[in-house]
Image (cartoon, rainbow, N blue to C red; front, side, top):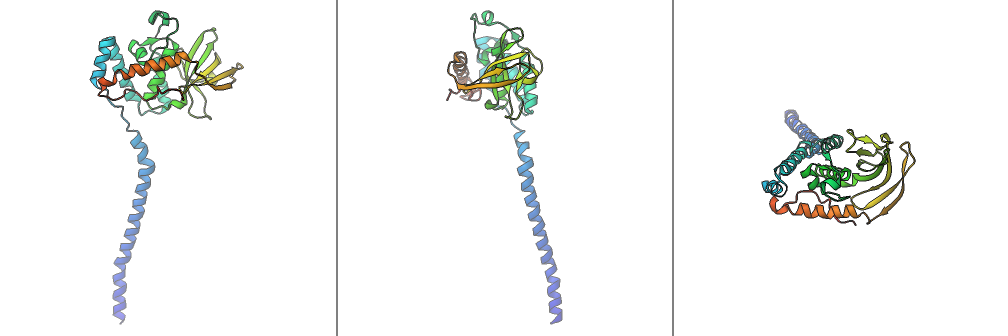
Amino acid sequence: MQPKYRNARVCLRPLKRLSELRYWLTVAALLLVVHLTYFAAPLTAAQREFPDWDQGVYAEINRRHGEQAAQRMIDVVQFVKVHLNDPVEVQLEAVNDYMNEMTWIADSELWKQPDYWATPIETITTFGGDCEDIAIAKYLVLMLLGVPDEHMGFAHVITTEKEHHMVLLYRASENDSVLILDNKEADVKAAKERPDLIGVYIFRNDGTVFTIKDEGDARRTVKDTLTDKRLEKWLTAKERSRENTESYIPFNGGKPLAPDWLREYR
């Protein structure tokens, strides 16, 4: 009987090794799942691609606004593709630099109106406008880059030269500083670094208005918050933007050109 038990122990060794092999294969599989979940997901997100617009869109821009206008739009789309996967901080600086190359032109000269808020397509195709036109164009390009709408807003400010001015704001979270994208300033700076701007009010795409109590020395606090539908210029610009972008959908194979940032106030 002794040899039988000895042979049994010999036979159990391969089974033990097989069990160990299965154990380590299970561990390896679990590690692979963890790797794919926590490491591969960001890589997948980094592979975002901006969909190409059909050539018909550029042909229609050419027909409506001329060859230079079509080329400007091509350049903006290419800009979006280049910076689509950059960190937000890089996107903010890149958009501010790029859009600040636009020529500042008074509404009375460009649009023959005292205060006209141009649509982003109008501003990009002319590559010019005043402060609110450039701020709105920056906003749209950042939206195309994937920056969430709720992190941005517009600020009506007064400069130290007593001029009324508009800038674009970005804030990553309530614990972060408000950053200012200004067509008169080369760098994106925190609001506390811009004591030269006196805040009047801030408004967002959803119609929320924050009136500002500005005590100087960059001490700015929200005085009041309300939903204000008296922003007629913004409402009008949004409606014209909607009509403007939708008019190009047939030339883009029925696909929208931009995110749905033109929704009605809720």
